[in-house]
Image 1 (cartoon, one colour):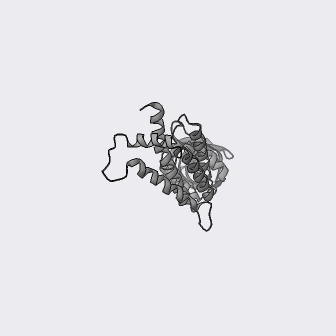
Image 2 (cartoon, one colour):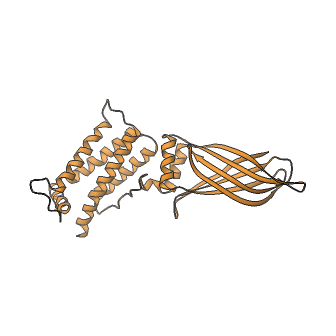
Image 3 (cartoon, rainbow, N blue to C red):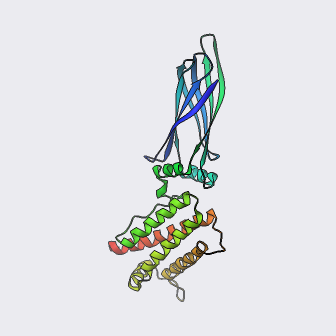
Length: 272
C-alpha cells in the first residue's frame, strides 16, 4: 500500500546538535488518498532517538509521493547511546512510521498502515556526521577541549589528542591508547624542564598550604600523571588486550590531566 525511502540525512550543530531526516512516502493504494498524519519512531544502531507525531492534510494521487521531514535533537545522552549500540561499526537505521489516511470520497474512515524503512550509514559517513554535529570537539561526557595557550608544543599535543578522539570513534582502541601515550610523552617534555615544572608546581600550590609532613598538591598531581603515563604501556606491549573501555579511560585521563595543566600554564602566561 505504501513504500518509504530515506532521501536525505543532514547533520548540524547550530544552535544544538541535530539530525534532519527526509523521507519519501509513496502511495501504492491505487487511489487518491489524504494523509492525516504520521507517527514515527527512529532508531540508530538499536538506540531509539525519536518518537514524533506529524499532523498533515496532504492529498496524494494514486502514484504520488509525500515528503516527511523529521528534525531530531541529538543530546550527549542520545549520542552516547548511539555510540554504545553501534559497537565501533556502521550505523544501522530503522524508521517505523504509522501512516494515518483516508480514501475520499467514499471511504472517510481513517486507516493506519505501518511502513518500516531499513537503511545503513557507513562508519565513515557517521564520523562525518559526528564532526558536523560538533561532537568531535567534545567527549561523550561533555568535557571541552581546552583552548591552546601560547605554547607551540601544547598546540601539537592537542592536535594529537584530537586524532586520538577520531580513532576512538573509528573503534581503533589500541591506536587510541598509543596516541594518548604520545600525548603524554610530549607533555612530559614540558614537565621535564625543571624551571617550567617549578613554575607550574608553584602555581598549583599557590594558596594551598597543605598539611605538615604530607606531600604538597603539586607532587600528588605529578604522581597521578606518572601513574597515568605508566598505564599507557597497555597499548604498545604484548600481551595486553585493549578494549573500548580502556581506550575511553585513556582519553578521559589524558583530557583531564591536560585540562588541569592547561589551566596552570594559562595562569602563568596571563599573570594570574
